[in-house]
Length: 152
Image (cartoon, rainbow, N blue to C red):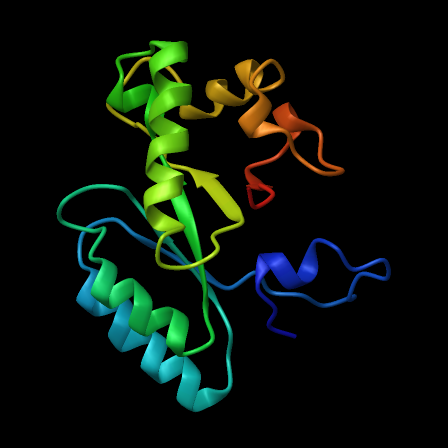
């Protein structure tokens, strides 16, 4: 069974077989759109995680992917982008998420690796408990790779 994360997480009775089909759009958003067309033809839903970078956050492409009934998520890397400044990272997170939400109601967020740094972008979640914007429904903040954020 193919479901988006947003469809799967709130289910009270979880599917025995579930494939969380997603793609990380790190460099080539046109490839993500092509894949979304193929998935749409096959009746498959997926989640496309977009980074907030000039090369990847092409809003016209993101809108086309949303129009194909796919879920779009934010692939955050705010600690990397702010050199581990937690306060700046939280501000950056909110700003970027709000920019994406001008196009589609993004509710799911996953962290980007930051492989070239000596820290983990997941560490931002440790500071989320004190930041009102990052309150999460029914999910322990530090235990998840993906998170659902309520609309404002």
